[in-house]
Length: 252
Image (cartoon, rainbow, N blue to C red; front, side):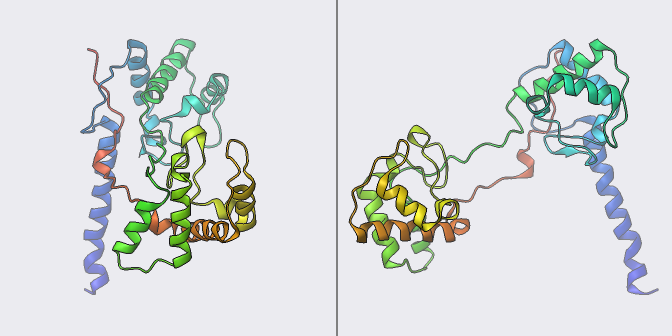
């Protein structure tokens, strides 16, 4: 027996067992992280209808489930209620029609609304880094032993002196007054556009009176950050074990 044949059966059993375990978890809605908010009686009825019609074999909730249809975790904020009723009554694409009566449709909608209202499964914006603009990122870069271009260091000093970090967060939108993330400003506006905004102001941003060398250094800083943002952005440790799944405490 050649090596290919020898490993074929173990490989098949491994793949089959993986799908079996995933199927069991999806079918039972098992998860170690159970949301503390109980479902209403109507939402529990909708959950039962959702399971009875095997919806989870095609759709995901919190990223777990089948992959023939879209994730429904936050469907109620994306799909109008009338469109949802059409989906169930008439089907769409590979989705068959489910002939549910009005109360049943309302119950499933209540279940999906409860999942959505929990705030779980909604991507959260990064918090960003506060303090002087990109100071922590530049410190991490230098701590790794990489040299920092002199013009970039000068641009960071100018940005610190002008208090840019008071409005703009490093690597995150939503600073003071909704100030945008500048990490990709050069990609969005071009170096010339960045220069124009920094020198002339725009919207809630004031006109920064900079000398030509200072302006050059700030543009150099933002150009360099834009080019290295994948390395400079703070990493976030996420574990699949932290996923909220889609189990709720039973009210019974």
